[in-house]
Amino acid sequence: MYKGLSWDDMCLVHAIVETGTLSGASRVLGVSHPTVFRKLNTLEEKMDVLFFNRARNGYSATAAAEEVRDLYVKLQDEVNMVERRIAGRDLRPSGTVRITTTDSLLYGWLTPVLAEFHKAYTDITLEVVVSNDVLNLTKREADIALRPISAPTGALSSKRVGTISQAVYGARFDAEQLNWIGPDDSIFYPVLQHWMEKTGHDSSCVYRTNSVLDMYVAVKSGIGKSVLPCYLGDSSSDLVKHGQDISELATDLWLITHPDLRKAERVRVLFEHIATSALAFP
Image (cartoon, rainbow, N blue to C red; front, side):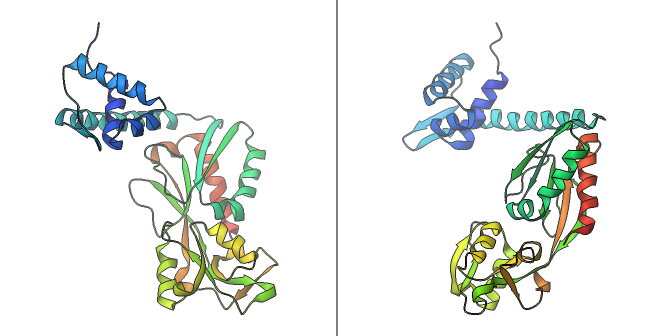
């Protein structure tokens, strides 16, 4: 009977190293705390190695556990690479494509674009991940990303498909006497955060949120005024623009995928559909 390390063993050790506790590892692995405890004890007995030092404040990795963690990361990267290459050989316009974008882009522009795509490619299932965090395309957390960023980083296949203009908007019924709505510290929005601080508006914020879409809803509700993407602000008859577009807040819109997946027909056709639709981006 084979008594060496299995893939499940490596997953177990990796989860405990990364979380530092058995309860944290149980959440990552989707099993109970007693199951993690039992499997770790069984593994240490099988290998005759102490992988973790037990302490009241958690489990600290020994050198053996760190070696297993490093091996897990290396093998997982290899698995991800093979999966991307296999997926990239698929030339049929069918299957599932997972796309990630922000809540405001999905609500304000992308959903009708995806609806048109679905009519043309009924054999392709779309999975949409709404996240203001940048998912890892290399690890296949998504196949395509539509992001407002200055420029993509890493070895990715990307295309700039538009520019997002921004301006200050307020509710029409009370356009002048309004307090400010702004981003909170948990959202990665450094350009707007810097502008708010530079102009002194940050100190007069009465409402902060980590969602641009929520900023839009808050403005429509009359809570205050805010900088909004023009594709959102201009779409509502309830809002009025204060002044001109703010040129220093204009942001490039990028469509991104992994080079290995760009060859997959289902990914290619969606990528090109969004890029073509973006020619008419507001």
